[in-house]
Image (cartoon, rainbow, N blue to C red; front, top):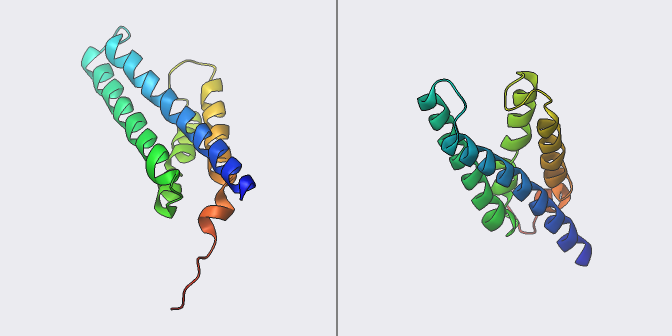
Length: 124
């Protein structure tokens, strides 16, 4: 029982870090848009704020309750970051943050996978 709690705790902390990163990026872009189309950057910043906040809420409530749908929904994170990396999308040119977020989201989803996918008792 103790091992299960530790794996889920590590998992939700990894996923919360990804959510926090997206949330922080959105706040910075919304408040301090780079030179260029300020309206577009504001929209991107607000969308990132929403994505980070929504993801954080899923991580902190249903994921920590071990609700299977939350585990499936959070697979959006590694898909998002892989597409972000493959598309060579900003911010920055080094893309290290994208690799870090891919690893964190995969650890957060694969580490507790057995617990989320185990078949519960009951008859059909």
